[in-house]
Image 1 (cartoon, rainbow, N blue to C red):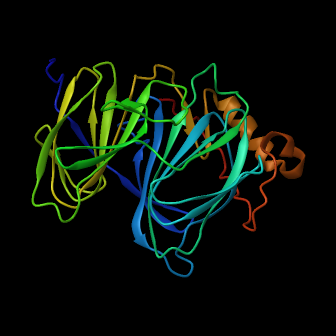
Image 2 (image 1 turned 60 degrees about the horizontal axis):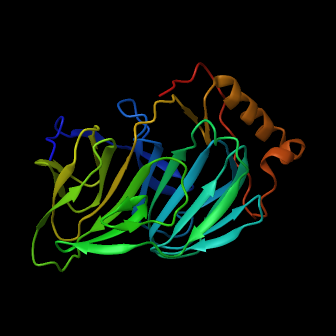
Image 3 (image 1 turned 45 degrees about the vertical axis):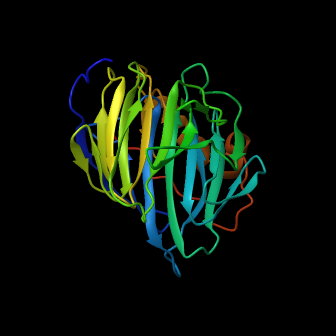
Length: 303
Protein backbone atom coordinates (compact mmCIF):
# COMPACT_ATOMS: atom_id res chain seq x y z
CA UNK A 1 0.00 0.00 0.00
CA UNK A 2 1.53 3.32 -1.06
CA UNK A 3 1.56 6.28 1.29
CA UNK A 4 -0.27 9.47 0.31
CA UNK A 5 2.05 11.80 -1.59
CA UNK A 6 0.72 14.87 0.25
CA UNK A 7 -2.15 16.08 2.38
CA UNK A 8 -5.41 17.00 0.64
CA UNK A 9 -5.65 20.62 -0.49
CA UNK A 10 -8.75 22.41 0.80
CA UNK A 11 -10.33 24.77 -1.75
CA UNK A 12 -13.39 26.98 -1.50
CA UNK A 13 -16.09 27.26 -4.17
CA UNK A 14 -17.69 30.41 -5.55
CA UNK A 15 -21.38 31.22 -5.68
CA UNK A 16 -22.95 31.71 -9.11
CA UNK A 17 -26.41 31.66 -10.69
CA UNK A 18 -27.51 29.26 -13.42
CA UNK A 19 -30.96 29.77 -14.89
CA UNK A 20 -32.35 31.15 -11.62
CA UNK A 21 -30.79 28.54 -9.32
CA UNK A 22 -27.89 29.34 -6.95
CA UNK A 23 -24.92 27.09 -7.61
CA UNK A 24 -21.52 26.53 -6.04
CA UNK A 25 -18.83 26.33 -8.73
CA UNK A 26 -15.96 24.11 -7.62
CA UNK A 27 -14.15 23.64 -10.95
CA UNK A 28 -12.63 25.46 -12.75
CA UNK A 29 -11.00 27.92 -10.41
CA UNK A 30 -7.65 29.66 -10.32
CA UNK A 31 -6.09 26.97 -8.13
CA UNK A 32 -7.62 23.98 -9.96
CA UNK A 33 -8.43 24.00 -13.67
CA UNK A 34 -9.46 20.35 -13.97
CA UNK A 35 -9.38 16.95 -12.25
CA UNK A 36 -8.42 14.38 -14.84
CA UNK A 37 -10.73 15.21 -17.75
CA UNK A 38 -13.36 16.73 -15.40
CA UNK A 39 -13.09 20.42 -16.31
CA UNK A 40 -16.26 21.80 -14.69
CA UNK A 41 -18.23 21.00 -11.53
CA UNK A 42 -21.33 22.85 -10.34
CA UNK A 43 -23.34 21.91 -7.26
CA UNK A 44 -26.97 23.08 -7.61
CA UNK A 45 -28.95 23.43 -4.41
CA UNK A 46 -30.29 21.90 -2.35
CA UNK A 47 -32.80 24.72 -2.76
CA UNK A 48 -36.54 25.36 -2.73
CA UNK A 49 -38.00 26.49 -6.06
CA UNK A 50 -40.89 28.90 -6.37
CA UNK A 51 -42.12 31.38 -8.95
CA UNK A 52 -39.23 32.81 -10.92
CA UNK A 53 -36.73 30.97 -8.69
CA UNK A 54 -36.52 27.79 -10.74
CA UNK A 55 -34.12 26.37 -13.28
CA UNK A 56 -34.89 27.84 -16.69
CA UNK A 57 -31.90 27.73 -19.05
CA UNK A 58 -32.70 28.66 -22.64
CA UNK A 59 -31.04 27.09 -25.70
CA UNK A 60 -27.28 27.47 -25.67
CA UNK A 61 -24.37 25.84 -27.53
CA UNK A 62 -21.54 23.51 -26.51
CA UNK A 63 -18.41 22.21 -28.22
CA UNK A 64 -15.59 19.86 -27.21
CA UNK A 65 -17.12 18.37 -24.07
CA UNK A 66 -19.62 16.01 -22.48
CA UNK A 67 -22.20 17.48 -20.09
CA UNK A 68 -22.87 15.08 -17.21
CA UNK A 69 -25.95 15.76 -15.05
CA UNK A 70 -26.56 13.79 -11.84
CA UNK A 71 -30.01 14.44 -10.37
CA UNK A 72 -30.53 14.10 -6.61
CA UNK A 73 -33.85 15.93 -6.12
CA UNK A 74 -36.27 17.49 -8.60
CA UNK A 75 -37.04 16.92 -12.26
CA UNK A 76 -35.59 18.71 -15.29
CA UNK A 77 -36.63 18.52 -18.94
CA UNK A 78 -33.75 18.34 -21.41
CA UNK A 79 -34.29 19.33 -25.05
CA UNK A 80 -31.53 19.45 -27.66
CA UNK A 81 -30.90 20.12 -31.34
CA UNK A 82 -30.79 16.40 -32.11
CA UNK A 83 -34.49 16.27 -31.27
CA UNK A 84 -33.97 14.64 -27.86
CA UNK A 85 -36.59 15.40 -25.20
CA UNK A 86 -35.90 13.69 -21.88
CA UNK A 87 -36.98 14.24 -18.27
CA UNK A 88 -34.24 13.47 -15.76
CA UNK A 89 -35.38 12.32 -12.31
CA UNK A 90 -33.57 11.58 -9.03
CA UNK A 91 -30.99 8.83 -9.35
CA UNK A 92 -30.60 9.31 -13.09
CA UNK A 93 -27.86 10.68 -15.37
CA UNK A 94 -28.11 12.68 -18.57
CA UNK A 95 -24.98 12.62 -20.73
CA UNK A 96 -24.75 14.94 -23.71
CA UNK A 97 -21.71 14.70 -25.96
CA UNK A 98 -21.23 18.00 -27.76
CA UNK A 99 -18.36 17.00 -30.02
CA UNK A 100 -18.20 19.48 -32.91
CA UNK A 101 -21.38 21.24 -31.79
CA UNK A 102 -24.81 20.89 -30.18
CA UNK A 103 -27.37 23.14 -28.47
CA UNK A 104 -29.77 22.32 -25.63
CA UNK A 105 -32.11 23.79 -23.01
CA UNK A 106 -32.98 22.78 -19.43
CA UNK A 107 -36.27 23.47 -17.62
CA UNK A 108 -37.46 22.59 -14.12
CA UNK A 109 -40.81 20.78 -14.09
CA UNK A 110 -42.21 22.35 -10.96
CA UNK A 111 -40.67 20.12 -8.29
CA UNK A 112 -40.50 22.07 -5.02
CA UNK A 113 -36.85 21.21 -4.45
CA UNK A 114 -33.81 21.07 -6.69
CA UNK A 115 -30.55 19.29 -5.92
CA UNK A 116 -28.12 18.17 -8.61
CA UNK A 117 -24.55 18.21 -9.81
CA UNK A 118 -23.54 19.15 -13.32
CA UNK A 119 -20.09 18.31 -14.58
CA UNK A 120 -18.27 18.70 -17.85
CA UNK A 121 -15.77 16.25 -19.27
CA UNK A 122 -13.22 17.66 -21.72
CA UNK A 123 -13.11 15.40 -24.75
CA UNK A 124 -9.56 14.29 -25.66
CA UNK A 125 -8.01 15.80 -28.75
CA UNK A 126 -8.83 12.92 -31.09
CA UNK A 127 -12.51 12.86 -30.00
CA UNK A 128 -13.43 16.52 -29.61
CA UNK A 129 -14.82 16.91 -33.14
CA UNK A 130 -16.93 13.74 -32.99
CA UNK A 131 -20.62 13.83 -33.96
CA UNK A 132 -22.89 15.00 -31.12
CA UNK A 133 -25.13 12.56 -29.25
CA UNK A 134 -27.40 12.35 -26.20
CA UNK A 135 -27.73 9.42 -23.77
CA UNK A 136 -30.02 8.94 -20.77
CA UNK A 137 -29.14 6.50 -17.98
CA UNK A 138 -32.10 5.69 -15.69
CA UNK A 139 -30.04 3.40 -13.45
CA UNK A 140 -26.47 3.29 -12.17
CA UNK A 141 -24.75 0.58 -10.08
CA UNK A 142 -25.28 0.89 -6.32
CA UNK A 143 -23.50 -0.75 -3.42
CA UNK A 144 -22.84 -0.22 0.29
CA UNK A 145 -19.67 -0.10 2.34
CA UNK A 146 -19.54 0.43 6.12
CA UNK A 147 -23.04 1.93 6.05
CA UNK A 148 -22.36 4.32 3.18
CA UNK A 149 -24.60 4.08 0.12
CA UNK A 150 -22.43 4.43 -2.98
CA UNK A 151 -23.53 5.07 -6.57
CA UNK A 152 -20.94 4.41 -9.27
CA UNK A 153 -21.74 7.27 -11.64
CA UNK A 154 -18.84 6.89 -14.05
CA UNK A 155 -15.93 4.52 -14.47
CA UNK A 156 -15.31 1.53 -12.22
CA UNK A 157 -15.19 1.16 -8.43
CA UNK A 158 -15.97 -1.40 -5.75
CA UNK A 159 -16.34 -4.11 -8.37
CA UNK A 160 -19.06 -2.20 -10.26
CA UNK A 161 -18.85 -0.58 -13.69
CA UNK A 162 -20.98 2.39 -14.69
CA UNK A 163 -22.70 2.11 -18.09
CA UNK A 164 -22.04 5.81 -18.80
CA UNK A 165 -20.01 6.12 -22.01
CA UNK A 166 -16.98 8.36 -21.58
CA UNK A 167 -13.79 8.81 -23.57
CA UNK A 168 -11.12 9.24 -20.88
CA UNK A 169 -9.99 7.14 -17.89
CA UNK A 170 -12.04 8.59 -15.04
CA UNK A 171 -14.38 7.82 -12.15
CA UNK A 172 -17.23 9.50 -10.28
CA UNK A 173 -18.95 8.31 -7.11
CA UNK A 174 -21.88 9.63 -5.07
CA UNK A 175 -21.52 8.60 -1.40
CA UNK A 176 -24.21 9.24 1.19
CA UNK A 177 -25.01 8.37 4.81
CA UNK A 178 -28.65 8.37 5.86
CA UNK A 179 -29.86 11.01 8.29
CA UNK A 180 -31.09 8.28 10.66
CA UNK A 181 -27.72 6.51 10.79
CA UNK A 182 -26.76 5.78 14.41
CA UNK A 183 -23.57 7.83 14.20
CA UNK A 184 -20.51 8.72 12.15
CA UNK A 185 -18.97 6.04 9.98
CA UNK A 186 -15.42 5.57 8.83
CA UNK A 187 -14.44 3.75 5.68
CA UNK A 188 -11.49 3.33 3.35
CA UNK A 189 -11.78 3.49 -0.42
CA UNK A 190 -9.32 1.94 -2.83
CA UNK A 191 -7.93 4.45 -5.33
CA UNK A 192 -5.91 4.24 -8.52
CA UNK A 193 -2.47 5.64 -7.88
CA UNK A 194 -2.32 7.04 -11.43
CA UNK A 195 -5.50 9.10 -10.88
CA UNK A 196 -5.86 12.50 -9.26
CA UNK A 197 -9.04 13.03 -7.23
CA UNK A 198 -11.31 15.65 -5.72
CA UNK A 199 -13.95 15.30 -3.00
CA UNK A 200 -16.81 17.82 -2.87
CA UNK A 201 -19.01 17.84 0.23
CA UNK A 202 -22.65 18.41 -0.79
CA UNK A 203 -24.38 18.14 2.60
CA UNK A 204 -23.30 17.27 6.14
CA UNK A 205 -19.64 16.98 7.05
CA UNK A 206 -16.80 14.76 5.87
CA UNK A 207 -13.22 14.20 7.01
CA UNK A 208 -10.77 13.09 4.31
CA UNK A 209 -7.45 11.71 5.57
CA UNK A 210 -7.83 13.84 8.69
CA UNK A 211 -8.89 17.06 6.92
CA UNK A 212 -12.47 18.25 7.40
CA UNK A 213 -14.65 19.69 4.63
CA UNK A 214 -17.96 21.49 5.15
CA UNK A 215 -20.68 21.66 2.46
CA UNK A 216 -19.39 23.16 -0.79
CA UNK A 217 -15.75 22.83 0.16
CA UNK A 218 -13.52 20.87 -2.21
CA UNK A 219 -10.57 18.68 -1.30
CA UNK A 220 -8.06 18.01 -4.08
CA UNK A 221 -5.79 14.96 -3.91
CA UNK A 222 -2.91 14.67 -6.39
CA UNK A 223 -1.99 11.37 -8.00
CA UNK A 224 0.01 8.85 -6.00
CA UNK A 225 -2.52 7.48 -3.52
CA UNK A 226 -3.84 3.92 -3.36
CA UNK A 227 -6.37 4.47 -0.52
CA UNK A 228 -8.54 7.22 0.91
CA UNK A 229 -9.90 7.36 4.47
CA UNK A 230 -13.33 8.96 4.90
CA UNK A 231 -15.34 9.79 8.00
CA UNK A 232 -18.94 10.92 7.46
CA UNK A 233 -21.59 12.15 9.88
CA UNK A 234 -25.28 11.27 9.37
CA UNK A 235 -26.99 13.16 6.50
CA UNK A 236 -23.69 13.60 4.70
CA UNK A 237 -23.53 13.42 0.92
CA UNK A 238 -20.41 13.89 -1.16
CA UNK A 239 -19.07 13.49 -4.68
CA UNK A 240 -15.73 11.92 -5.46
CA UNK A 241 -14.37 12.48 -8.96
CA UNK A 242 -11.04 11.42 -10.38
CA UNK A 243 -9.14 10.60 -13.49
CA UNK A 244 -5.78 10.25 -15.12
CA UNK A 245 -4.15 13.71 -15.27
CA UNK A 246 -5.04 15.31 -18.60
CA UNK A 247 -1.83 16.71 -20.01
CA UNK A 248 -3.61 18.58 -22.81
CA UNK A 249 -4.22 22.22 -21.95
CA UNK A 250 -7.84 23.18 -22.54
CA UNK A 251 -9.65 26.50 -22.74
CA UNK A 252 -12.99 26.74 -20.92
CA UNK A 253 -15.01 29.82 -21.88
CA UNK A 254 -18.77 30.30 -21.53
CA UNK A 255 -20.19 26.97 -22.78
CA UNK A 256 -17.22 25.98 -24.94
CA UNK A 257 -14.21 23.76 -24.32
CA UNK A 258 -11.46 24.17 -26.89
CA UNK A 259 -7.72 24.24 -27.39
CA UNK A 260 -7.13 27.62 -29.03
CA UNK A 261 -8.57 31.11 -28.78
CA UNK A 262 -9.36 30.97 -32.48
CA UNK A 263 -11.43 27.79 -32.03
CA UNK A 264 -13.47 29.45 -29.26
CA UNK A 265 -13.94 32.62 -31.31
CA UNK A 266 -15.21 30.62 -34.30
CA UNK A 267 -17.74 28.75 -32.14
CA UNK A 268 -18.95 32.07 -30.75
CA UNK A 269 -19.31 33.52 -34.24
CA UNK A 270 -21.23 30.43 -35.40
CA UNK A 271 -23.67 30.74 -32.48
CA UNK A 272 -24.14 34.48 -32.98
CA UNK A 273 -24.89 33.89 -36.66
CA UNK A 274 -28.30 32.62 -35.58
CA UNK A 275 -30.25 30.75 -38.25
CA UNK A 276 -27.31 31.03 -40.63
CA UNK A 277 -25.20 29.09 -38.12
CA UNK A 278 -27.86 26.46 -37.50
CA UNK A 279 -25.94 23.90 -39.53
CA UNK A 280 -23.40 23.70 -36.69
CA UNK A 281 -25.55 23.90 -33.56
CA UNK A 282 -29.00 23.13 -34.91
CA UNK A 283 -32.37 24.22 -33.52
CA UNK A 284 -33.82 23.45 -30.08
CA UNK A 285 -37.62 23.21 -29.90
CA UNK A 286 -37.84 25.10 -26.61
CA UNK A 287 -40.24 27.86 -25.48
CA UNK A 288 -37.30 29.60 -23.78
CA UNK A 289 -35.31 32.35 -25.46
CA UNK A 290 -31.79 31.41 -26.63
CA UNK A 291 -28.95 32.61 -24.41
CA UNK A 292 -26.83 35.53 -25.54
CA UNK A 293 -23.10 34.95 -25.28
CA UNK A 294 -20.90 37.43 -23.40
CA UNK A 295 -18.20 39.35 -25.25
CA UNK A 296 -14.96 37.47 -25.80
CA UNK A 297 -12.37 39.88 -24.49
CA UNK A 298 -8.67 39.38 -23.86
CA UNK A 299 -6.65 36.21 -24.04
CA UNK A 300 -8.10 33.11 -22.42
CA UNK A 301 -6.13 31.14 -19.86
CA UNK A 302 -5.43 27.52 -20.69
CA UNK A 303 -5.22 24.89 -17.98
